[in-house]
Length: 192
Ligand code: GRF
Image (cartoon, rainbow, N blue to C red; front, top):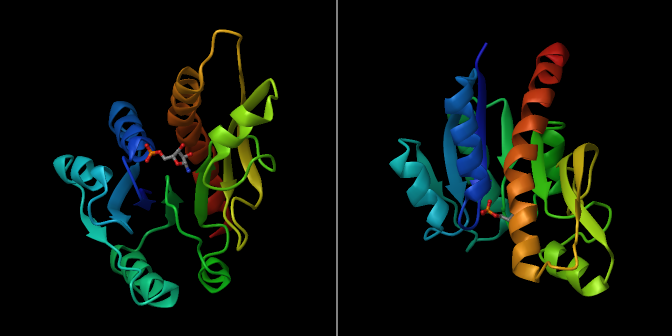
């Protein structure tokens, strides 16, 4: 059975693109049915369009409830099994989460529960700690919170600048989201 997924982004979409590439390289039974963004100009939308994927812009002008109605429509229209947040900078409401329990995943550029929020890499960097990492987790109603599926540590070396460290984090993200996704999908079908 093909697993049908949707992806929500807000920016450049490198995690989305990595997933699309992994699917193609491994010829996996996963279909990216749509990529949607709360920012109509998100660079990732253009990348998705160029890869032949349906895209959508979600307006948050009328508030979160109206925006989530649009996301729900996409969910139903494309009959997705799973929604991936990939650099999506909006909070999902508890209502939406409870309708889709265990069916929304997120990636965060730190070792949750450490450094949640929009500046996970910068906050770690300023903390002076010696290692951080990447987390893939199931989304619940709290920000950057919910059952952890996979984590990978990333050390900060003496040679690192914030830019080189950030690049290491992103390189790990581009592998870890895929590994976590492949590992999680069979669990979804057992539950259905
Ligand atoms: C990633 O670091 C992700 O973990 C965080 O936002 C960033 C998005 O990057 N939530 P991209 O849009 O996937 O390139």
